[in-house]
Length: 362
Image (cartoon, rainbow, N blue to C red; front, side, top):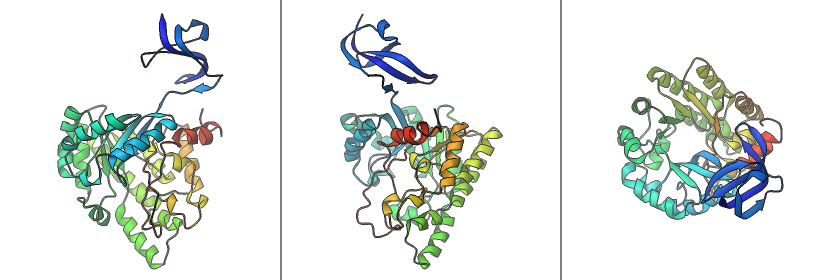
């Protein structure tokens, strides 16, 4: 048997640990993993020189086209993904800000064609539920488009929703979306950005009156209570409906502890956190650093350590980047700066340096 490529002298990382051996690839697919002498003959041999060979990383949480055209992000951000070892990414926003309200069936083909022309990584589409029509069409998105993940943005309420020209999100939409998605069965799941935005608005007003524009003010305005209260609320709705939920970008120890209590009593709660919440706190930056603005905000070192503890014990199930690249250009202060951090190129390096090399994970 002759294959296209054989990679020899590898340290192959798999679910059950690391083994020494080689990999045979033919027509773009791995067809054998074996000790080097047992690999089939190949047209090309690559000597890995004892380096680790890791399966392509899946990033379940990525944003495109929030600050730039979708096509531009497909070209540049999938390059960042592949450079960072990510071969599959799930897009939360696609098609452009001007099309957020459009039914997904109207914009799916165009987005799919753009991805097929320009993306260097595999792409999965997620439907963010901005309108009542989006919610009612959940079964059609699953049946006709193959979309099985549905995002609820609890922070798009009141002023923030108005600024984007979006309908205000409320608990009635949350209930309806979870109820409809729960009828689909696996693998359908509802993804939740959990945030009590009313508390944020009140805290922000106090900070503005005090003249606060520093990075810590952003963390204080979107306090851990904003996240934890919303986590508790959405779990209550999920439990009542028996609907599985996926809590995206959990950033605080309080939120994690609420999720752990729910998991212990049998709630269908999956928890995600992000590389920046595992490696940074707001104290790592100057007070005027608008580039460190993200949502949820960076918190404290004790939150970082608690999230690692949750990973070690299996309470945190996966890592997503919440990738949202922006230069922050033209921002005057923390309130006017666009929120979002890049993560596609750094997810794997951060998990290796802060996780594996520091002995927090294998």
